[in-house]
Length: 304
Image 1 (tube, one colour):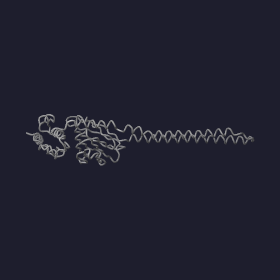
Image 2 (cartoon, one colour):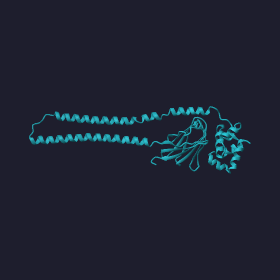
Image 3 (cartoon, rainbow, N blue to C red):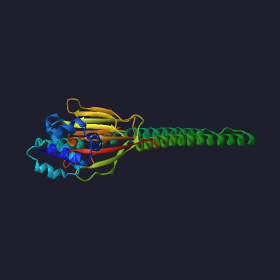
Image 4 (spheres, helix red, strand yellow):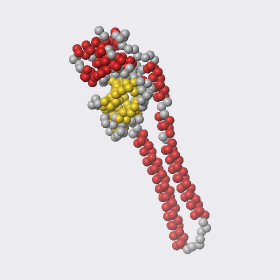
């Protein structure tokens, strides 16, 4: 008995149709039929044969590792050293992430504004000090007592007005600086961020991530360093993208604005870098150990 017949027999024993198995494994029906018929050439590549067979076996109650060991002569072997090569490239891309330098440069406009405010305050203070010195050096004119008293009161009012102007200028400058600081802080808080809610385990790990502070228009950008099969669906099982992603058609953009929960099925995780609304997706399970990744992403918009 061939491996495809063994899997089909296990499926029929559990009264599972190919349609229900497709819903469980997220593997297209035509690929499931090809596995049962032993026609591995129809799969996206020999690399995916083992991953799809493991997924099929787990869904029908068979031990994937024992099954692959028993029929290892019948299952196409993936190309060696392919995964380590992609992992190395992926780590290099992360090490060269320009986000760190961008964070440093984002503070430059704030520093410039603060220096300008300090300069304006200093010029106003210097002007007021010069005016006060000129008034104190003017020679006194002989006047009667009433006029002297009147001029003294007038000088006091002028000096008080000048001090009020200086205080007002300082307060306005401090207010502008505070408003700009609050705007910068608000901008930083509203940056999209991906966090792990649940890390998948077992032979067929399924993980869940949360995207916080997403905008109204959410887009997933997929960049490839090699060939990988990718399936993207919304919460209702409707396909948003299905096919191969490679260096020839990379980057691929997928519109996620119409859903609050999205499913990613990645056939060769080390070969793909995924960002959602600008936030980098870090695979919850080590892609060197599990190249076939299944991930749910909950999308939370800013203010929710």
